[in-house]
Length: 576
Image (cartoon, rainbow, N blue to C red; front, side, top):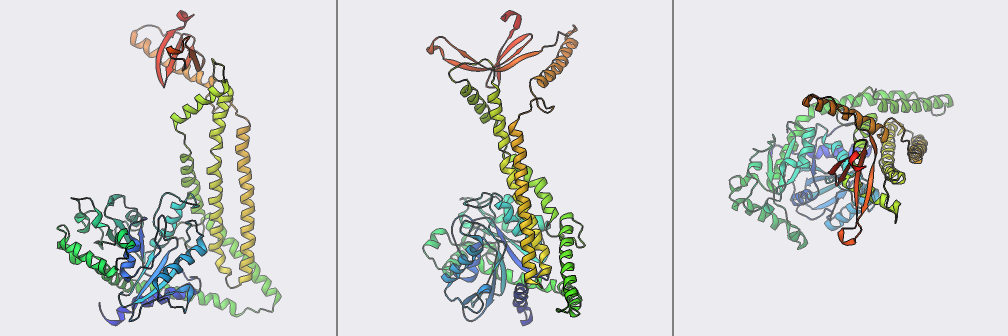
């Protein structure tokens, strides 16, 4: 591995992580780490358990990892686990570690598959591991389940991006071999933040589950979608093996035999498998820390200078001076207001190049997420035709009508307008949540005064919620106004008058064209008199009963349509 000093780099960074976690990570230090990214059931949990040689991660269907898990593996002669939130307590039973992860996850996210960006930190000491730190992130999903919010996909993506956007973060992209690599969610996210593939390590799982006659040789040889750090194949335990409590050490032996005996992989068997992956990650993380140390030290020194400067301001602070206390209070509140405004308006002194925040995220909601929600409400034309047909027939009842009733039109239009309520309410909720998130970003500067921070936070969030309720009521009122009166005289409404105008214009153009082609004068323009659904009833039931047709009656002809196709067109003078 190298000299002793190099081996101590990873534990050193772990201690820095703990120190920053203790002070609430107020120092914006991006420490080197490895983030594990993959879709649901990609095999992320099995890979991590294989590293440890123990079953200790929650399992199940849907989203199992609902909070980031910072897993610190430390080589030791004894085997046990420690949680950051349970300092001093040693867990020697790995089933108990699993239960503690589940309990701590439910404490913040509830039991209905919700997620949270607040990490759980777990240290595992074992003689079977190499020094390594990984962050297991929630699996990528697209369909919400249970009581999950409709935008669960975006929430998970945001949590993942918070980690992998940082230049000091290596990305372990886990992809099953039995799926199309070009459509891998993990590799797509990694490519968004690392387009050159400089800090992405590919892991291909489920090689033993590929269709007969296929293999992943081209991928593992780094010839398809190449990465600078390459791809490593692993074979995890199957669900049957897990249910049967197959020993992980026996599974690792089976994995080695698989690569040695497979004709497509035996020439690269020494560079495949879980033990090799763990050694490579240990080496690459150590080298990454070593390479990042100079820049990290410079950044740390600049942070220290800034903190010392801030500390100097408080040295002259006299807690018994009422005037001084009032002035300090006003300054802190004013600074909070200015910081909040800068984040919303985008005029801050420091520009975040890693993540969207404040006003930029609200802008994204306005111009990307809200339009997408509106698109989802789009109607199926076939279904809409059926609804129109049912509405007309239900309004006519036992009678047969000649023309389309206004009530049917209003019923269909009102239903379409009402469908806007859902996306609008969701849109308001998303903007409100972003405003609250922005408040949390700014209010950290009041951490020196806990009571002031708590009360300020309560007042601001209460005001946001009140304005949110007012906004929701106003939006619903606007939709109700539209539902109360359908203005068919509006210039945007393509009704009978506008249709007649457009049809006349179209007829003039077509008649002129015919005249030019035939060398004769154009015929008089056709004017649409009426159009609508018409029910034709036969005398005998055996002849087919009643049938519905769409008709257009113009000054010159009567046209009949069925299922969008014109059946016949008769000359009006002959019909009369």
